Structure formats: C-alpha cells, structure tokens
Amino acid sequence: MDHTIRHDWSVNEIEAIYRLPLLELMGRASAVHRAHHDPNAVQKASLLSIKTGGCPEDCAYCPQSAHHREVKLGKEQLIDPGIVLKMAARAKAAGVDRFCMGAAWRRVRDGAAFDAVIEMVRGVRDLGMEACVTLGMLETRHAERLAGAGLTAYNHNLDTSPEYYSQIISTRTYQDRLDTLAAVRGAGIDLCCGGIIGMGESIRDRASMLHVLAGFAPHPESVPINALVPVAGTPLANREPVDALELVRMIATARITMPKSTLRLSAGRTDLGREAQIMCLMAGANSVFYGEKLLTTPNPEQDCDSALFAALGPVRVTTA
Ligand code: SAM
Ligand code: DTB
Ligand code: SF4
Image 1 (cartoon, rainbow, N blue to C red):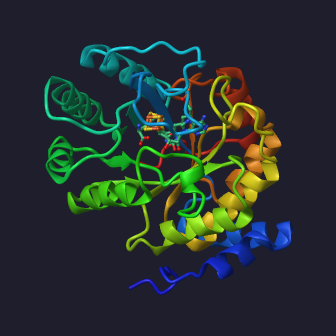
Image 2 (image 1 turned 180 degrees about the horizontal axis):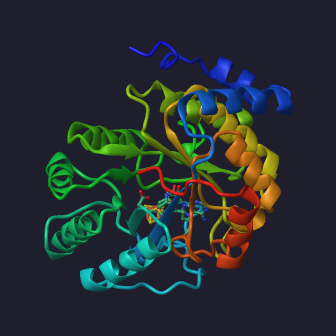
C-alpha cells in the first residue's frame, strides 16, 4: 500500500492547492512528479478521428455535435481499418507510442462499425503501440470485447465539475459518464479520464472535477487536461482563451492529487509558447499529443514541436 496516494481529498483542500502561490505550487508539484515519474520522459501520443461529425450529443465545446449547425465540419463515415493502421504505423515511425482513435458517437452499438474498431485496436497493439479509443458511452459487453482485443485505455472525460456540467451538456448526465467509466474499469481496461478548462467554469469547479477524479480508487491511469479550443459555430466560440498559467495550475494540482497518473497536456497547445509548455511539463505533465491535428482542430505543427523537443534537450520520448 502506497500511503502517498490518497482518495479522500476534499474540494476545499484541492482548491487551496490550486490557489497556492505559483512558485510554491510548481515546486510541490515538481517534487511529487520527480518522486513518481522519470522527469526527463515525455510520451508522444497521436490522435485520429476515425469517425467525424454528426454526433447526436450537444456538448457545447465540441465541433462534432450535430446540434451546432453553424460549424463548418462535414459528417464522415468510419475510416477503413487498413487506412487507420497505415496512419498508426506512420505515427510509430515518428516516435509515437500511443495511438488514440476517436469516434463521434453517442454510444457504442453492436455491429459492423464496432467490429471494425476491434480490428483497429488489434492492429495497433500488433504494431507494438498502446491503443486508446474514445467512442462515447458503452456497456460491459463492449468493454469486454475491447479488453479482449488488447485495448490499453478507454478515454471518457468528466469534462467539468458535477455542478457546472449541465451548463455544458444536456443530452447525457454526469451519472451516465460514471456508469461508462465503471464498465471500462470492470473489464480491466485503464481509464483515460480528464476534462477541459476555459469553458467559463470557476476555480471551485476545477477543484471539484479533480475531486471526482482523485476520488476514484484507483486513480485514472491517464488524465488528459485540455484547454478549450474555441471553435466557430459552437456555443463556446467566443470564450476568451484560458491563461496559460491557469493550465499550469490545473496540471500541478492534478499532479499533487494524483501522483502516479500520466497527465496529458492535451488540446490547446497551439496557443502556448515553448516556455508555457515547459512549465506544464515541470508541473507534472508526462505527455503531449503529437501530429498536426487533434481530432478535428489544429495541433502544433511539426516545426514547433521539433523546437520544443530541441529546447528540452535529449528526452526519453517513450514511456510505454
Ligand atoms: N464522443 C466521445 C466522448 O465524448 O466521450 C469521444 C470524442 S470527444 C471529442 C473527446 C474529448 O475531447 C471530449 O470529452 C472533450 O474533453 C475533448 N474536446 C472536444 N472538443 C474540444 C474542444 N473544442 N476543446 C478542448 N477539448 C475538446
Ligand atoms: C482528450 O481529452 N483530448 C483529446 C482526446 N481526449 C480524445 C481530444 C481533443 C479534441 C479537441 C477538439 C478536436 O480536435 O476536435
Ligand atoms: Fe459527441 Fe463526444 Fe463531441 Fe460530445 S464531445 S458532441 S459526445 S463527439
């Protein structure tokens, strides 16, 4: 039993950590990070949208929701597994060791499309990479099939606090999210579960979301922290970009409350300079998404990321 791992943080305690003087917060987070992780390793993960657009959910941040009719994004069919696996192999050749595939589905259904996803998961694992998928809600039998195909992790985010959630999504409940996460856990698949900052939530909401995550026993193995990418045509299109230092605080607080989890500096990197990204890594981030696109929105171009990795000096780019 590792007594440094706690599941009983209170929201007040977490908020107090978030509000610490920045240098104190970063110092503490960095110490926890170094105690539990190789501070010189940064995992490169890649994302691919295997089925884009037309999603029946109404998530206010998401360009793929069919409810946001002004978004300029086509609705596409599921990509053929052969093409997906070629892209995974290309990512692997670029030093990526985790390949994440996202479908704009409300829920997993049995049938040919799910069979194709199972084939993709098997293929990515056969390439020697970690495989993660995010397919919306699922039930135990789906989770078990994914586990049988060797899936490493299932991404399903809380997105925000239980209190702020209804401002962002009306087509499913927080409890729906928790039920899917329980089905994933029950099948023995790692959880990839995090959220977004910059959607108008308060610092209390950020602490409250971390309270739910850190209350899971075990903690999610992977915690993506996204900064909102405001997309034209979505209800959050005109949100002010979140201050980079808020992202640093969020990552540092996640690191202190979930010492062993892999923290992913996820969406929102295009607005961050090298220095801000390096602060996020010092505060406890272990991984970035690499490649010019996230699911549908831009990610830093290869030149920018080469400059970032060059500035870091020789880092171990794989942790798998
Ligand atoms: N449909 C599945 C679901 O919602 O679980 C999977 C795909 S969904 C695009 C995966 C995650 O991407 C969301 O939970 C959200 O946290 C993040 N995301 C989507 N749009 C975003 C945006 N504009 N800015 C930041 N993060 C975003
Ligand atoms: C996560 O938390 N962030 C990634 C991954 N999980 C699937 C997705 C970010 C998507 C950003 C919006 C887009 O590109 O469509
Ligand atoms: Fe659909 Fe996921 Fe986008 Fe919500 S976040 S609209 S569930 S693709």
